[in-house]
Length: 418
Image 1 (cartoon, one colour):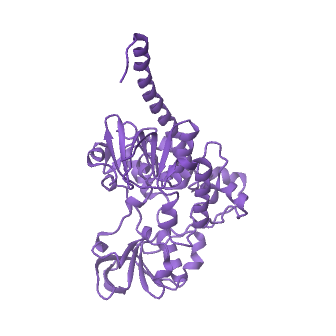
Image 2: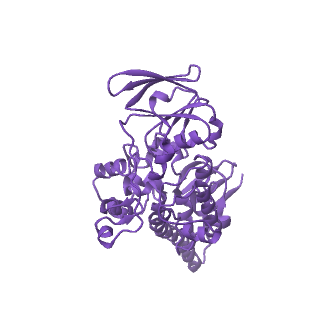
Image 3: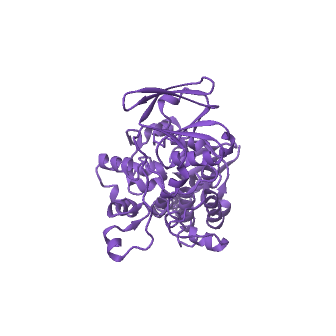
């Protein structure tokens, strides 16, 4: 079995993993990224999806800020403007362009199947059977491990039920009646794409009415910008704080932080989806009480008004979001997972994204409970990368020093070191 050693192993090759790797490599560290670049965005989002984040909030993070989405669009002649959504396919291409220029051959397109401790090091086992020892591990696992499906749907077989993160080519649903469960961007956009692909979507949600984000105003005056500054999470001083100063969010009381993450940018559809959504059947104010596999799927609904009804469909797509839960970190060995300090199954991180296990870091969605809602979005990758890289350098430099000093002493004393 092949065994390699690296300073830093980055698990995940999405926006956060690639950004951390770019910063760590610039710092002179021996880094290896594991995973296929932008795989979750390419294979686990519907074809035809548009990013909800503004283009200026969708940059990956290289230290010199040269490889932005704006630079990519300029290089290849794509439009780049405020209030002009980016297609997911273009964003995938951008991420891979970023990876090529900033990470290069330091990417191993192989999944990590387990991470465990081995003394002061970490031992990673890859799907290929190869094993790697590393001084530091950065978990940039994204959103896929944390997909949330309502309990009332979990008894359905996979042939009838999919989470929105499991659907890619919606043309497969053409001619089928599909219940889309949820009221947020993912649910609304999935319903639109299903309709456009020739399916018959029915949006089912507990909320009494759907919410829509306001159409952005590109040219606001100085007073308007002062009263409600623009940020990666929208307009307003509160959004600016959560977006641009996550290091301060970490100092808020735990309950406050969790509330902010839960309520900031809650379920709502983008302004550019509203016209496309026209004609989609909706069943609002309804909770799914039971789902049975009968000639497709039979859904028992309880209305908030007190009535009950049934909906018969061919398939169900649960666009019901994500919930970070340490128990879903399946790639961590049980002993390592249990040793990570957590509250309500949410990891507790230090000021540089380090867990209670020295050398083990978490970025992206898993860090939202500590640093706030910006960690749910690509925009948070710059802060994460710029914060984690110095911590990695300090730990690796310290480990190298500990190895060199005994060797120097041995040489001075005329003895050998084995």
